[in-house]
Amino acid sequence: MTNWSEKKLSRNIARGDEKSFARVYDLYVNKLYKFVFLKTNSREAAEEIVQDVFMKFWKFALNNGKDIKSISAVLYKIARHLVIDYYRSSSVDKAFFQLEENILPDGIYGKDIAKDIDTEYDLKEVEQAISILPEQYQNIIIMKYIDDLTNKEIAEALDKEEGNIRVLAHRALIALKKIVLKN
Amino acid sequence: MTDNLVGKLKEIDIQASEEWKTTARSFLLSQIKNETKIQENFIDRIYQGWRNFAILDRFAWKPVSIFVLIALVVLGGSSLAVAVAQKSNPGDSMFLVKRGIEEIRLAVERDNSRKVALAGSILASRMSELNLAVETELIAEDSFKKDTISLAVSEVKKQVQVVNSNFNRLKNNNQENNQEMAVAAMGLNKKMIGYKQELKDVKEKVNEEVEIEINKVLNEVDDVNADVLSVIVAQRAIGDTTIADNEIADSLEEHIYGIQNKAEEVLAVLSQEDDQSDLVKKVVKVKEEIAQAGEALREGQYSLVLTLANNSNKILKILYGQVDEIIQSPDELNTAQLGEETDEENTNPTSTVESVSDGDIEILESEESDGYRQDEPIEKIDAEVEVNVSEDEFEIGIQ
Image (cartoon, rainbow over the protein chains, first blue to last red):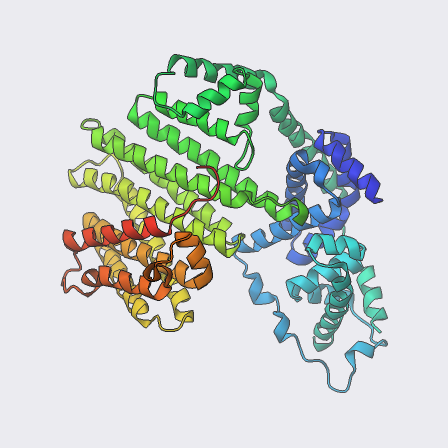
């Protein structure tokens, strides 16, 4: 979607236009569902959180619609915060399952991870590996390679510089590869 | 180099069920209709606005905010403006009018227990505004962020103080119907416990500066709770069984648990700082006192529980204030505390800590064998608390 059409949609929503809201829903529901599901590993949680995301988006846009530059950035920000709240309130200690960046596996002896191109990956293993990536890498992997957001959109959603996204994406892929190969 | 992996990522095909997507879509569209209606229902808002203005007119002689009267006169008694004000939030230009209307409502309410309930419902509004401010700030793009969270926290703090003062007025004036007051106190206690949790949730999402302000609000909430619990416990002591024993025990347990958590937080911060071993010892002693309160609770000695808990809380308040000052840099401390004053004693965090330790030495080192504290040391602590609060309290936002 072009910037212009996003701005038009958000301005319409600020005026209370339900059709514009429905359009936003149709455009983003699949991507957001994927994003939240991969982070929570739970269909029920993903359904509940995605619904909340759109409700909060509506309320935010009613008051701030004319200021929104990127609808996707707002939606993903809301989604991230709701997932964090979900982990805070749920009995599952996400931190127990999620790796910190400084304790990612060192790599596999004899293999240059960055240059390895021949390995075949199991889809399920990749999905599981994503769920235990550190949060920052998780976000980038899902947004860039699964939800197909542009670097600009990812930068806005994560409050980072666009230039940093490429570097982070590269690191995230390496991290993911290490986990998958280690398993 | 990672082509295979990227290719595999692109194969991930997680889909929500079509049934859910359709149901959720319909549900959302029905819900947002309600949201829009609330925003646009000016007919009800205008009516409410006129009612408020009419009340103001009748009670203009009451000592209420004069500037609000002026504002409403200037606005031409505009009910639309009043309607807009009622939807405003901290930081909005019309928020002052909203607060003014609330003050008027509180002022014209004659019944003390209804006053407390009204103050409580206004506090609920302040909490909603705070939650909204936090959500909005987290989502808003940097160029459009406003510092509304600090303002909202400040408003919550003021309203908690209003609730406390109204409750104390009720307590002092109410010679009959103590049962009714105890029931009202229990209701207020439950709300305060809820607000405490909400404030703690907000604390996790804000920066350090706002966190410090929220800690002050949490202290105020604890003060209200302490007053409320004293009424409940006093009623119980004279044999009033309107409130069930287990309800009182649960509330006291919650109170002690909150103080214990506070002690743990203070300890966690102090253990990261150098040269704070004296303060650490004091916190450890406070924890022992809290443990004694727990014992007293198990034995049903509610008055003793409250005395021990409140004593610990007062000491922690002082220590908490000092911990906040230790976290702030000396430069920030200079600016935040005293403006242009250059008194060395006040701007040196170390000397402030020492002055506190003088004040509370009697409490923590006294040799009460049953853990029961005398009144005199508590009054000394009170004096220290007042001094420290007036020195380091500054308010952001609308006064």
